[in-house]
Amino acid sequence: MTGRTATLNWWIHYKKVAFIWFISALCFFILFQMALHNSSNTLSSPSSDSSNLSSERRSKLYDKMARDLDEHGAAFLNHGETSQSLSISDIFTLKDGSVTPVLKPANPPVRANVLYLNTEFSVPFAEAVNNIFNPYFDKAIWFQNSSMYHFSMFHASHHIVPVPATKEEIEAEASSVETVAARLCPLNIVLDRVVLTSTGVLLGCWQVISGTDPITIRARLKNVLPRAPEKQLYDAAILHTTFARLLGPPRASSTEHLTTSGELKFFHELVNQLNRQIRGFKAVVSELWYVEEYHVLALALNGKMNCHKFKLGCSSRD
Image: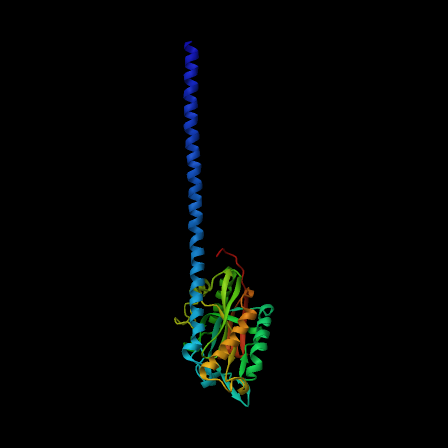
């Protein structure tokens, strides 16, 4: 009996110990999984939150831009300023209904970093803009070259604050931009809306579905281009491209009986018509260009330039 009792007691003790170890292991496993889950949320949430904040920031910018025409009127009818502190007469001449760009030498050359929109996507937009606006404005309009649709990101030098650079410094800047491009992921974007500003610029305003956010792109470019002007030309979140510039009034037959408010309504209707046709269209951006512009606004005016083209490599996680 004594041996059997000892064996029974040992067996009971063994089961208790085994049960305690099992419960301990189970608790450890559960706590470990919870820690992994929390860690995953900690890593992913800021990125998601940041993306949402960037999107909201862009929406507010676009709302403000959309109100600009009503708040300031059609200044382009009176040869107002452009969005870069230049008057329309600084960059275009309008004579006998023909528009000619004024190609002024940029000394030193402007050094712009832009995301490029491939013609696969730009040509359909250009055709839609032309079809809707050209019948009313004829030659009093400048259409952006569809092979040069771009999104301005960051300037190493611009015409407001010139930053001279030697040939060697330019090569070093281009090399630094290439390094940045290799770490950026292609942007999948969607056309949020088209707006017409008081200065007559017809803009496509975009949102980012996936890929590296413009705020991140500009921050990285700023980091590798420390000599760049502190004051850049655009908000860090914005992603927009110019479709066309209105340089004068529409044909008299279109608005001859309209008041000023009726004139604005006419412009809004053209923009609404364009929005109905192309709003929501998607595109992919996969190139970052470092551009030396030898003429002021060479990218916009088909001026002389030298483009260093880099593919977005997405070699690191963003």
